[in-house]
Every structure is written in C-alpha cells, then in structure tokens.
Image 1: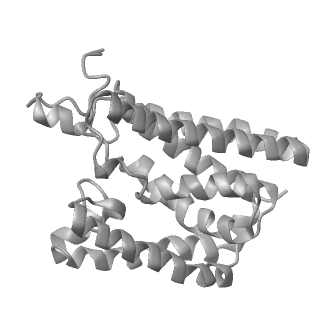
Image 2: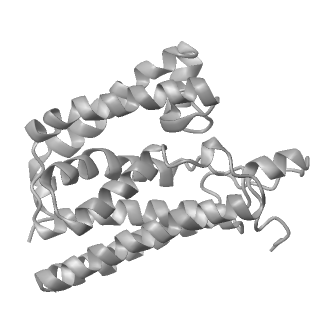
Amino acid sequence: MNTIYFWDTEYTLRTRSVPTTGFNHFCPGHLAWMLALTLLILVLVPLYRQWSNHRRQLCRRILAGLLAADELFKYGIAVFVGDFRPSFLPLHLCSINIFLIIADAIKPNDHLREVLYAICLPGAFFAMIFPGWNSLPLWNALCIHSFTAHILLFVYPVLLIAEGFRPRFCRLLRCLPWMLGAATLVYCLNQWWGTNFMFLAWAGEGNPLAWFEKLLGTPGYLAGIPVIAAGCWAMLYGLPKQRSSFHK
C-alpha cells in the first residue's frame, strides 16, 4: 500500500508528473467499496424501520452531519496542500445534494425529499458504479472522501423510502424549473471558470455520458442527460410494485 500520495489531489499529481496511480473501475478495491454500501443498506434499513420516529430523526441528522464533515474534510485537504481552486466549490450535483440533505434533516420537506429520491439516489448510484475520481489512488484522502460521501448520499434517500416517503412524479415536475435554473447557472459558471460541475462542460471518462460523447461529440453529449434521466425516472416512478417493497 503506497501512502506517499495520500494527501494529493488530482491536480498536484498531474503537476508532479506522477506515474499512473489511479484505480480501474470494478477492480477489487472498487468492488470492496460497493460491497460496503450493500452491507450498510442491508444492516441499516431493517434497524431503521424498527426505530422510533425520534431515533430515525437522530439517524438522519447524524448522516447529514457526517456528510457536512466529509465535505469540509475535502476543503481542508485542498487548503492543506495549497491547491484550493474553483473546482472544489460545492457545485457538483452531489455536493448540492449534501446541502439538501442537511436542510431536510433539520426540517423535513417533501419537495426536498422528492429531489433526493429522483436526483440524489440515482446520481449517487451512478457515481459509485462509474467513479469519476479513479485518477486518484484507492488509498488517498480525497478518494476515500468521494466513496464515503456517495455512500451516505445513497443511504439517506433509501432510508426516507424505508420510512414511508411516497414519491410523486407531479411533485418532481414542480421542482424541475428550480433544478433547470440551477443547472443553467452552473453551466455559466463552468464557462467562466473552466470547470466541469454537473458534467455540463465535458462528459468525463468511463461514464454513460462518455458513450454519448463518442456518438454526438461536445456539446452534443448533453442530449444524453435527459435520456438518462428519463430512463432513471421510468424505473423510479414507473414500477410502483417494486418501490412499495421499501415501505413498512
């Protein structure tokens, strides 16, 4: 296990011209993180269903607190190595979902929960399947942060469903204008800073959007976003019998 790169970011590794130290998708280390997520769900969901409302609320707030600490840890690393830059700002979709989770943990809100169900849940799932931080070594602080944060992002909406939250597509439609407005703002900031928040500037590598980029180029690959979203929402909202298995 090479710990020399533990505090590096992908930018400091690139600046130092470090030989390839990242990990491959579905390598043993990647699969171990996915197994950890699966085991956490299998253990936590049955317990969560048995707990009182007060204990459930405490659990959600602990998860929100862990996510906040995880995000602050990321900023601390960037400052520590002297490499804080606009790309570390919390404008990635998953970072925005952290703030939504914190808001819901403080004061539950069905519209926030709808976004967490429709956006955060599939987003965290795809991030775990196709991690975009695989240029980092598995034994790296930011790599560990990315895996743990996305595990928590996936677990939180799963617990909401286990508790009895009932998603409604009509509620999601009411949230869409706000979501599109946020995406438009992020797109403009990407043009200004040269960043790639929400994958709105380029597709990245090894994810479903990269497949669209090969076919349609840039920015044509952006047409893949509504296609992928429609497929996810068809599964999340179009299979009520499967969804009901999460309810008490």
